[in-house]
Image (tube, rainbow, N blue to C red; front, side, top):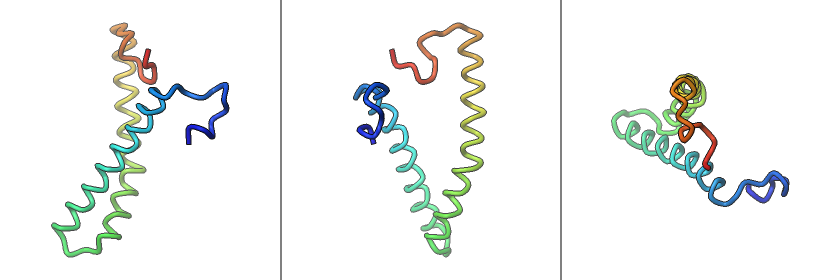
Length: 89
């Protein structure tokens, strides 16, 4: 995916790795949550995965958005320069 970015806008390897590792960790978490939940119930694991995915893609994103906005406001108010989102130095 990194090589599909325009050369003049391409992120350095370290920043690209930090961005993509967050996505991979989130996908691993939802996968293992689905495996755990499917063992607890008699439901079809595929239908549980669909429900988990839809909840993650809707409510999860809303919670993350609200959390990022709240933390960003706190960082701005306290002027903590090193904690700004998306700025790796």
